[in-house]
Each structure stands twice: as structure tokens, then as C-alpha cells.
Length: 159
Image (cartoon, rainbow, N blue to C red; front, side, top):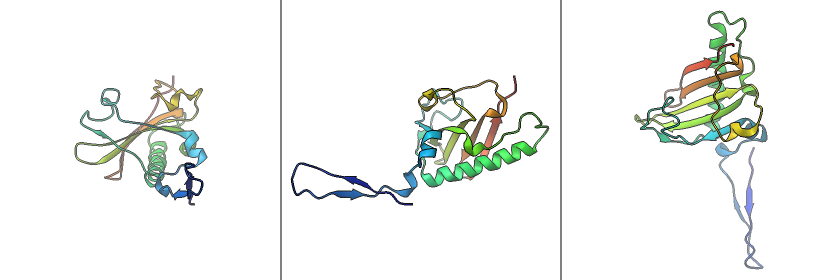
């Protein structure tokens, strides 16, 4: 699926349109836009997630699709482990997600994803949300995209 942005300058009557196609990798559909929020790495705020020497990074559409696959695999593994009778994670692809992407000191790209099955207001798009309980409705996962390895999938406890 390709989309084009048309930019028109109206300073000259015969000015031509300049058509700039955006990279397909960076285009998000309306569902993704409504369920995704991206945050720039902040060394102070994110010190419990990443090393302070990390540098902010961006994510491409291809990387986002890969992250979704890695979350799904992590959830399948989580659901199969231990006694999960009351804390099964269902349909993680429908969760609202907050992303923080970095390049670590080794030059590897990592992403931390904070996931919610439901949100009550739009503040989740501008502030990292924290929850202590809530069971499988809240989970976090840290992924090293360079190594293609997910670590630390944590679902919250039940109150």
C-alpha cells in the first residue's frame, strides 16, 4: 500500500505541485495511530528501563510489525508457563502500546513496550502509564531488535 503527500506552494500562479512519497516503513494506519504512542528516551525518567548512556532511536513500520510478532510469541510462552488460570493474556495485538526505543552502549537497538488492554483517557499518549495490579490487562516487554531477542515480559499481578 503506497500513499503520497502532495505539497503545493501558492506563491507563483504557475507553480507546480511537488509530490513527495513518504517511506512505506514509516506510515501507520489509523488503527495503529490510535493504539500506539511513541516516547523519546529520557535518561532520568527511563533509568529503570535502560542504561543512562543509551541514545534515543526511532522505529520503522517494519520494526513495529516485528515487535508485534515478538510480543505475540512472548505472550504465547508466558501463557504456557506455570499456572496461568487467572492471568492469561488474550489478544495482545489489540492492546494499546507505548514505545521507547534506544540505541544502547553496544550500538544495539532496543525497545521497551508498555501494553494496556484498555485505557480510560488520552493521557496514555503523552505520559508513560504505570500500574501495580490489573493482571493480564497490563504488561511490559523489553526487546533487543538487533539480537532479535525479547526479555522481561511481565504481566501485572492480580489485586
